[in-house]
Length: 194
Image (cartoon, rainbow, N blue to C red; front, side, top):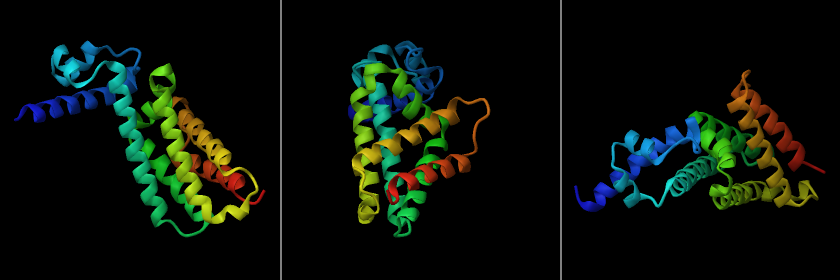
């Protein structure tokens, strides 16, 4: 292995370890020592890959967001060319992708908030990206509502975030189809005729 390949391998092992540890027990409870132990690398090697736990969390969060955006964008491209079709396809894709691995959902919706300022900018970029996706997916149907599209997009993104937090933290976890149905209902009411 070249030095570059070794660095990439260590970085990936740290990302894998953080994916599990940052999801549970959580970012605040995860030390660099524990990350290194899980990834089977030295503390010194950690700092060759990342400047600290915060940088690792940002990289992990951004990867989760990029994968989610790509998954939802693909679903939207394949969706029926109606507002209802796009709403259903986009929401179902996001909810199913986020919940397919509880760690992804936890990092994107719980730890992102618990980490405080660490992910503030990364979270804002993610919200902006998803808002643009919602705006673009509903742009052909703009005459349907006189409301500010950006504000509606931000509102419906908040709905999805709260539904996924409920799914993660509730003792009586709602079914995925129920989450999708509620989100679709709220999106349709928000994006439909005003």
